[in-house]
Length: 272
Image 1: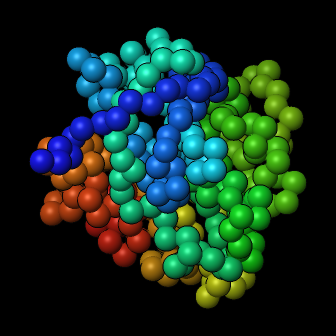
Image 2: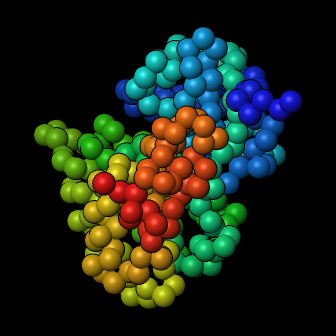
């Protein structure tokens, strides 16, 4: 009998500290060819628990995946004590992921991400940036609390070379220094810096805290973007991944099973 909760052991290949509370874990994985951008994996620690974590990058040929993990609970507390060579227990991938080939291919793709919300879209941005996936144009707004919270700085520098990228922090601190061309203000304050001249060709992806997604989507609506051209990821609501615990449920919707990616026509009803 197949046990849907049974994870498999995989070796941690590398760990990098990204910020004071966010580390990047690179783990061997023999099912990377099954992953779609925006999907998630259940990470288990025996006798401690498990946590759903978005896949931030993957390589099917080399057989590895990466997780951006924030130290926020008992499972992640233990994870931060591990080192390269130790074993993690994984099951998945789960969730629908972003419908790149069906909706975004050869379109004008706008991605708005806040804080650790950059994690679920990083692999998709890299795929477009490295020409593995085709779009007419990609524009990015990436928002963080302050310059100390900016993640993936080297990749942001690379993305800036070929794409319109607005990097913004909620508030500049006295003495802040950053050579990435940082703006100040919420992501919603920079939507008018995007090229929204051809809305028929546009698809907008928004990932971040619920309030950020809500008001960013409203801002795009103000600029004439139809609801069906906006996509949200409710990655923060993911739970057991198989619809058994009910913790991911919003009204009658199981985010783990139907999401975490939703078109705004449905996603707006899931926002508070």
